[in-house]
Structures are given as structure tokens and as C-alpha cells.
Image (cartoon, rainbow, N blue to C red; front, side):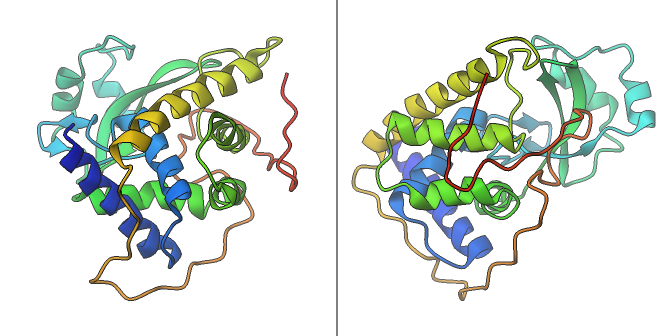
Length: 250
């Protein structure tokens, strides 16, 4: 991705933040959100099918696959190495415009097919990530807003809250000793690596409000911190982290 492309997508993220939350993000908050998107889907460019790029920034799901859809995929078990093209072709006639078929995994259930969200523009795709982290997960929004400087510690704090809200599941069994800490450590390390790359690429960038949309009032955050996009195949109990930002891990 060229520096110009990174700048363009950073603008899209800042505009999306303004669209969803009604304010311009701080640069630190934007960089944390962009680090999530870079780690998950290379700033929205990693997911694609025959229709083109899905512009899914946060690897957020739209819905579970219907039984009839799964029946068409019985001969294509999901895995890390599965060829997505035949699977997507098998459902080409039924996949709606706002979905893309993809595979996902969780350490307690393994690999499964699911419908990820699909968007027509980078700004719309970034908006879904912002809505997930900024509206459905209040502790994640608070961690991003409270960040004055993007550091490894700030990435760990955000990753801890994201894990507590089940944004990601990781690869280590959380039922085993050290599993939760390993999952958070893996994710926060990935965020920090992405953030370091973004800090260099966006050294001169400043978040700006879009010039085509008037400010909007953010909607109240719901009580539950699990967003609509999190795959319902993975049963979980959502527990908000303590208000002081601390989180006890195994």
C-alpha cells in the first residue's frame, strides 16, 4: 500500500468516526482504530470476492450462515488454507450485496463459515468498525479517547478491552491456564506492530472532519457490549472491564 493510499484510508476512517460519533477523533484514537483495521484486513483491502473488495475494515461479521447455505458448503469444510473462490461461487446466487462469505475460527469451536459485512466504499466500511468499537463497546471507545500517545501499553489496554467484549477470540484456549493472557498478548503485539508502521506513514497526517456532512449526535451506547456483527456461532458471556481500566487475566 502506497503512502498516498494509507493517507486516503486514514481520511476515510476519520470521516467515518465523525459520521458515526459526531466528532473528529484525536490522532491517537484514530491511529489505534487504524491499527485494528490494518491488523484485521489491511485497512479494508484484504477481503474480496468476484464482486471486488468488500471494504470490511474491522473483520466484523454481518450474520451467521443459514442452514441452506451451509448445506451447499458441506463439500468445502472451512480451514485456514481453504480456497474461498469455490465456496463463494457456490453461494453466488444467494449472498446479499451487504455480505461476503468468509471463514473464521475460535479456539473453542474451530473453523466455521460465516457472513462478513460488505460495504460499497472505504468510508462506509470504516464506519462499521467505528460503530462496533465506538458505540457497541463503550470501554473500547473510552480507551481510544483516553489515549494521548500510541504506545505498546496503549495497544495492550485497547486489546484487553476488545477481548473482554469478545471483539476477537484469539487462537489459545481460554479455558487453559494462560490462554486469555496469550490471546490478549498476541493481539496487542500485532496492534503495536501495525501502529508503529502507521506512526511512520502518517507522521504528518491530521484527522479532519468531512466537508460534506454536518455533525450528528451519537446514539446512546447499548447495555450489551457485544456488537451485532460478532458471529453468533461463538457462544460467549460479555463482561465489561472495570471502569478504572484494569483487567485481570489468567
